[in-house]
Amino acid sequence: MEITVQWIRTSWTKQSRGGEAAARRNAAPVGFAVPAVPHQFAHVVRMHERYGFEPRGGQEDLRKVDVMLREADRRLRVQPRVESLFGIPPRPRRPPAVHLVPGQWVRWQLNYRFSSASGMQDWSYWMDTFNVAYGPVAVDVFLSEPTVYVDERGPLR
Image (spheres, rainbow, N blue to C red):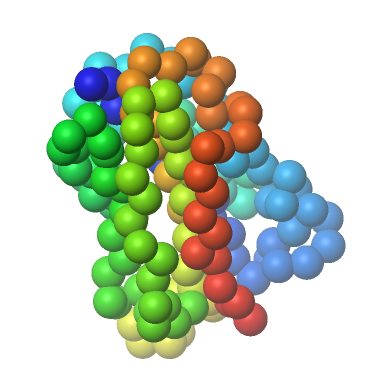
C-alpha cells in the first residue's frame, strides 16, 4: 500500500517570538501539495526566519525522517520519534500511536526549544509537522483537513 510522508520543519530564534516576524511564522503553511516523490522518500519542506519563512522543498530518505511507520493487517501505525535529548518542552506522557486505514491521513505537530551546549548562544526553536497518508492520494491531500490531528506542541516560554 502507498504511504505518503511530508515533513515540514519551521525554525526560528528569539527574533521571531513576537511582532511582525511572529505573525509571518504563525502564518506559515502546515501542508503543501505533494510533488512526485519516489515512495521510499518523504517530501521535506524547510522554513526558517532567515529566509522570511519562505518554503524550501526537497526530499529525504524515509529512514532518515523522525517518524516511525509500521504497516500490518491493512493498517498503518504512525508515531513521530522524540529523542530524550530534546526534552523541552517536557513530554512526560506522549499520545499513543495513530493507526490509519487506507484513505486516511494524520497531521502530527511537535515543537522544541534548544540552547547551545555551552549556553553561549540564544535559544532557538523549531516545529515539526508530519503529514502522513495511507493509500493512494491526490497531490493536494495535505491542503485539506486531516482525518486525525495530534497536537503535541507544548509551552516554549
